[in-house]
Length: 220
View 1 (cartoon, rainbow, N blue to C red):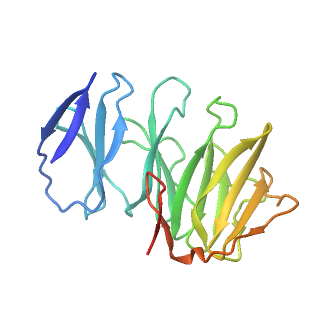
View 2 (cartoon, rainbow, N blue to C red):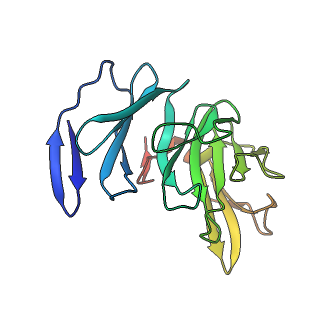
């Protein structure tokens, strides 16, 4: 069963049937034409579906691998229309509202990708994609998905906890990474570690899981 909203607070609960078992959670997305909620799901055949507010399957398309993490929406063409950005185990995807690949995507990066963050330095939609792997590697790519200098990839000695996050501090753009050994590292846009880092926490973070999309830490 799915619950979707139309307009101001109207909530509808309906059942949608699929031919195959679903392996993903329902990803809540927005129809940029009217602001309505929609849902994207994936089945065990790696097919993804868009379910609209009428509880109809708007489109479906296969992927090679399961979606990893969350689905982000971006205005890739700067025309107030939204596309879907996400990663699978090895590639960065951007697809349009009809389920078609944006030109030159997907982009293969590496096996065992685990997180994607969208970065928009000046709110001008010249996006950067911050992507990490289960091996402790971090990619920072330009809008076309091409890794930037110093980030192809940047390798950390320990596993990364959660994702590599972007912050602006005093007008300076920085990236933060927390490692499983308790180190916090602050890097510049050009992958240079700032003086005074890494900071060492007296914690073993190897048992911490960062859940999506709330990013609440859970210790197992």
